Image 1 (spheres, rainbow, N blue to C red):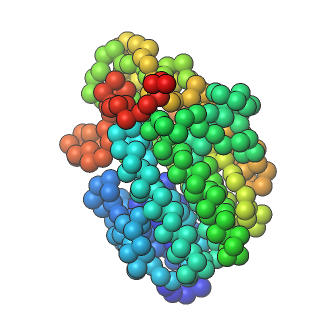
Image 2: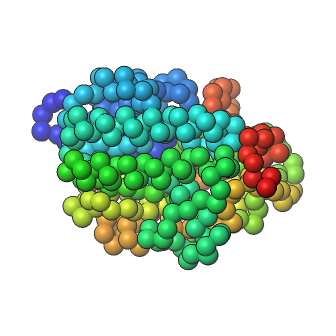
Length: 353
């Protein structure tokens, strides 16, 4: 570490949102940044290598689900972003035990690292998945504010393993922060999307299928609604949450509140990709909620957060990145589209009462 720059540690810094935050901070020139990642979703790609080499950003290749992964970062940092985790509906359904093991390990070893190194401030990245049953079962308001209870509908269902670990993480980081006198902030991401987000989420799935000339395009969960926020807005909102003097021990929604249906989303992507075929409604993944839209007024009021990139603009940039990826014949190393009917739900006992 050097100079008077803010010393920043980004756990999961080569991942989708982690890369966005790394990129945002690199442009500011007032940060000394170290990123840690195990590159489990693939090798170090040219984008992360170029970004880090061009801005003197240190890369540590380590598995944060194990204590040994913290060996090279035993130091005091001013800001620590905890973004590392396993995510993806397919992964939750097919390997729920691994989702629990990895995410819980990251939480445990990071909080113990906090005890040893006493960082200046910690931000934990949580998720809108924590509201899996809040609106559908308990009928809370949509757009949903941060103050509503967190809830999932059935702990036996593998779909909710990711949400369980995120709820655990929020509690753990707040508890350790209070015990150790370390300021902690939690952000709950609300459907952040953009280039380089992997192949495990709805928007890449839709782009992949249209690129591969699926016709008719099946619209899974066609009548469900979501609100999407572009990666650059998400990165800026996260940094605002970290650096705000009033964000200690607070939770913020980082996303957008422009709610649209999955049918509209799919047709918009199709139009932008020049698709002229048919669309066909299809069932969604079990456990998927019917509506989700955040109330972001708290982040606007307290952080000055205002998402500025329109859905059309963000989708255009995202489609261009994925089209270039597919044109280059690069291999999808993690994820890729698999329809709900192809996934194995046999480990779930939901409905077997």
